[in-house]
View: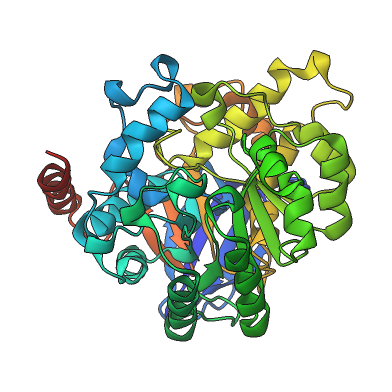
Amino acid sequence: MAGYLLRNCAAIIPDARSAPLRDHDLLTEGPAVAAIGRDLSTLPLPPGTQVIDAQGWFVYPGLVNTHHHFFQTFVRNRADLDWTKLSLIEWLDRIYPIFSRLTEEAFYHATVVALAELIKHGCTTAFDHQYCFPRHAGSRIVDRQFQAAQMFGIRFHAGRGGNTLPKSQGSTIPDEMLETTDGFIADCARLIDTYHDPAPFSMAQVCVAPCQPVNCHADTFIASAELARDRGVLLHTHVGEGESAVMQARSGRRTVQYCEEIGFAGPDVFYAHCWELTHAELARLAATNTGVAHCPEPVYLVGAEVTDIPAMHALGLRIGLGADGAASNDNSNLMHCIHSAYMLQCLVAAGRTHPVPDPAAFLHYATQGGADLLCRPDLGRLAPGMAADLFAIDTRRLDYVGTRHDPVSLIPKVGIGAPVDLTMANGRILWRNGEFPGLDEARLFHAAEAALHRTLA
């Protein structure tokens, strides 16, 4: 694979904790960053290197999305599913029958839609928590997701989810979406054997991710932990999003204690949400080095308390950001989530024990923090030898007048409303000048729209 020379970048942000490098060049070779420095174009370049004029560009590490539900892109912007007009039970009773109608084709096209929006807004690594497996849709849903990710060229971490507890025993899942623990574990093992690549610069990995303790038998979580540790893959689930009282009544333990006691905690585990956790529970996550995928935008719709990121930050928790699914966030724009995460913390700062982290911390959560959650030391920052995952914004626009002195705080404080000018993953350009090179977005749009209407007419 040939490389690229981004020449005369206005600013390169190596990571959120480093000073921007002004008027520098960035050279990629194959999947990696080869060099960052001044006047690299005067040096001998590897054969086939393409030179890109990057004047005015701010270049950032690619964003790492750590929690999503791609299939939910087919239920966006629906008035009949408005959280503000329904109770949680009413909402669940409406949304799950819709999910249960999705087909393998619908799951594929919903993934295409989510990945396209992520890439347009600077995301280069995407984790999806796919827990919806209607029986009629078959067992190759995650395989189709890998197919879509390969088409775009984005790094894809598949969280193979599942639900095993019947609704009659207290879950919220309709029976047509239930699996057995044995069936769930068998398919996780199949996906690991087929797709998981642990090597540096890997484009495909698998995570064992039972949906949530409240919707699964205990043996599902125990078997998940055994399989993941036997195969050397990560574990993920939903924790602390309103279910802790139910878990207390059912098992005598709130969710964090329950997960820790059955072995579903540790440096190879990260939880989504965690907005209802007590300070003592956050301290337990810190003690076990269990990570948190914070999803800020669902707070607007769900109306729950704002996740205590300052407390997590003060405890040294590993934190990443996630867009979450369209059932509680109607977009797949992780860039926007950086701004939302920072602004939400500022909104409630007066009532908190710890101060809001600096804006740079929120950019860190979306880059190096996310890479750390996914145990990817090759991602999350720009330096020689690191993966050539990046996005660029041409700041020579009126939108950025008065902001260009501080590239690190630009995204958390000001927010970026438009798609970026370039997204690159593994040294390959995925998005540039409003296009996906080599792909016909209009064709992808019409195919996805048709699949949506065939499934949810």
